Each structure stands twice: as C-alpha cells, then as structure tokens.
Image: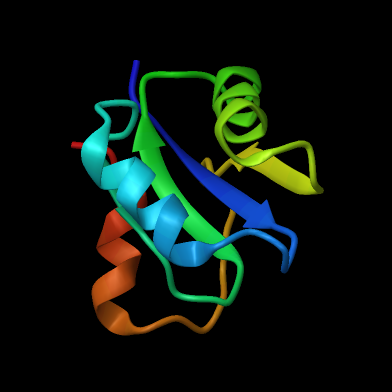
Length: 87
C-alpha cells in the first residue's frame, strides 16, 4: 500500500543528493519539498524502511520519518496539498 511520509533531515544532509536519490531509485512514486530540510514522499515502503535507506546511503545523522495520514493542516503552496493524497 502506498503511503505519504514526511521526512525531516538534519542540516548536514545534502538536499541535492537526496533529490538525486529519490529521482534515480524507485523507492518513491512521488516526492516534493516545501520546507527546508524536509521532504514529502509517497512510497510503498514503511517508515522504518525509508529511515534505513537514508541511514545507509547518507549516514547516521539525525532524521525523522513519519506517515502523513488524515489529520494535518498548515500553510503550504496550494499546489503542494494534492501531494498528500494517494491516488
């Protein structure tokens, strides 16, 4: 089952390398970023698996992966809100 996750990263992570990783692998079906050091991704992997991939490919620095379900609210660009809905 595909789910939407929020990934928060420490400042030490290289955003361009993370973007390349998402684009070059099939771990995520959709991703976008709207806030510094954070990504929203859709994936069939669970949070533990995504966290493990981040640690394996980018090191053990601080990061946090959580599922974005139905109880969320905030101030993001209008076009980003559709990224939470899993088709």
